[in-house]
Length: 299
Length: 183
Image (cartoon, rainbow over all chains, first blue to last red; front, top):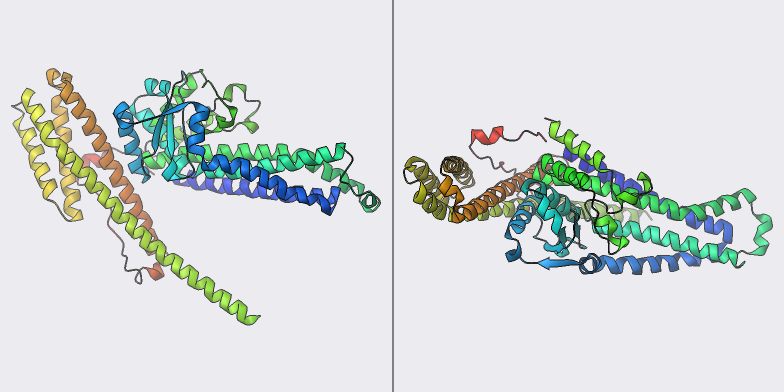
């Protein structure tokens, strides 16, 4: 498997998953119509609006917001010229602008990138990752983070979060309507197929869960894509592979200020508590390392 | 009804032609920008060399051949103008610098000097930048050439006055051996 094939495979998978999310929205609307009748679909635009405002506000402010949520501090070239050199190198390889650089005071080695577009990109490192990694490993990490910028992953995750959020709100509102007995037109009951009613109810109950699963799957594909793109930038799978091994060997976890930003780190801070693979925002480190190792071997 | 369909089809075709044309122009501009970036990095490296040579001379003055090779290669590199010459001179300078750095291994005093250490870091990041700029240029050339040679964008290459570019290849056999990984 070379990086170009991996890149396009992951792009296609993301597109498929986003289409799946669209399908889920359609299914929810259909279930609403079946169960509650026409009047209920008014909640859809309301839910979408709420989701849009909450997600896209943070999308536009992502670079400034994340700084506050992670406690990152912007630094200038003079503070760490070596790090800036490294980032400039990878920026050249990627053709991206030089991003803003920030440091997070933390004892766990980790890094992240954010920003709504390459002009507003921000890349941050914990103090620990700068201590434990050598030049080659850091280059791999930087390439992975800049890949998120190049692949517009802040946008992709915002789209996924909006859809999942809207579905959750619709489902929540419907459940409340049911408890309070409102909503359903009494005269519709007689003409409806009971199986269709039960199925619709199941769809409405399970949709938020399905949306979260899809959202996590999208996040995992974007991580795999960023690994492949990182190799496209550096042409050196070894650096990133060794960096991931350092992360794997280290058991400390970023002292989270907020779970809301868990997905943006290179290594998920939630991995330790992750219930199952299906919900995690990152592919397992072993899997990522194995893929990079295969790229090193493919001569 | 038929008229609407005909108009719509014509509009779509026009948009597609404009899109393909613009894409070729854009690719061509990216290639030029990428080449300019190589030149920026090469200049940075050339500016670094006098200082490096002076520092090494202070500790290892009798490594005259190696030092002279670097100075000569630098002179050639700064004089080069055409893309072919630039690439050739770049290759020679890269080899000469590697030779110089290999020689410095024998001089512990030199390697320990703070001045040399900071020069070494600057030189290694510049070397990386030069090589990433070359790689980025070649990636852009690859996209441009692909667009020019494949149908249907090949139809507009003449109209957009863009032609296939040569890859930036430096004349250095050692460089060809380095990549262990094939992409």
